Image (cartoon, rainbow, N blue to C red; front, side):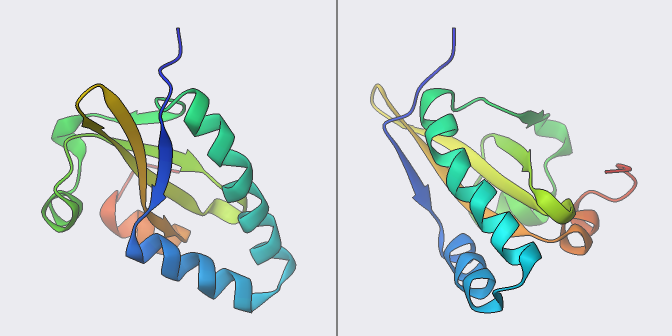
Length: 115
């Protein structure tokens, strides 16, 4: 049974990435933005949708910067990634998208993953 969320929230770095992609107006940027927008209803319906990163594999840099208790990764076009966490406030769940990054940035956090 999927676990729904009340809302999706964009963190500052994710908002910056979206603004940068919107300014880019390349085919790649349009494709990435289309997928990010399409993920919103999917994540609201099932906030545990894609790849779960085991707690012991969450990079310290991300854990420290964002205070993560859990981490999920969604693949985007052109090897970009959307990283999000699920937070609870009482019985309500929220999806917090905190990073939308290119392959090189993702690979620095997760070296040797072959993704």
